[in-house]
Length: 232
Ligand SMILES: Nc1ccn([C@@H]2O[C@H](COP(=O)(O)OP(=O)(O)OP(=O)(O)O)[C@@H](O)[C@H]2O)c(=O)n1
Ligand SMILES: C[C@](O)(CO)[C@H](O)COP(=O)(O)O
Image (cartoon, rainbow, N blue to C red; front, top):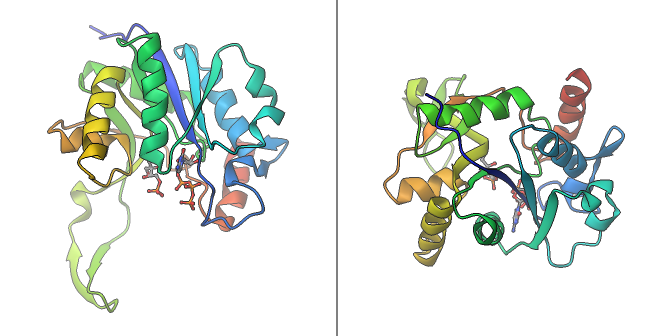
């Protein structure tokens, strides 16, 4: 039987500055075809039938978001993000918790505009077999090497059990909020939501997602993301 979450709140960390992109504005506001990266991401989440609300975490000095048509959407709320991605996610979780502590959080990077509804649905449905939560991920395809500090190969790592962590990542709001805030208080490095759950002893599920759900990180990624979006 489907363990159907009562309410699903999408949380979108969008408070980064895009230092690796090196553009004249934060990368989430760069154009991909007719609209910005963030606008694509928000449209996909807002149009998903199981997502009730989208909470977007913005840089406190953000001067771009109010220009997006999506900023006026009745099912979208903004909160101030923090210094690291995890701080931004926690700020949005705090807000979501005041609305509905029993909701589930679907945390998705603003910078992954190519995510599809099929992948989101697949992740939500995975709660049936992963009741503590799960993430989209992609199995490593290439031969993997471990190096020393001088870029010499030390050995070949078995790729069979290695995955790339993607987003969305799907967890109960109250549990994720508790583990994320405890991990941050303990000064643990948290690069995704699953890291906080793992730190607390939970073993989240891995759901095989599409490899075109890329994170736009470097300038080259823009063309690739534009191509993927044009093909969807
Ligand atoms: N303090 C931060 C840092 C990042 N993010 C968001 O987290 C996602 C993934 O982060 P990343 O790709 O690293 O984005 P940036 O931090 O903007 O990029 P860079 O690390 O190159 O500066 C992005 O949607 C970004 O906006 C955030 O909400 N708050
Ligand atoms: C959450 C994440 O997108 C998973 O791949 C990623 O960890 C966040 O960004 P970063 O490039 O690792 O800083």
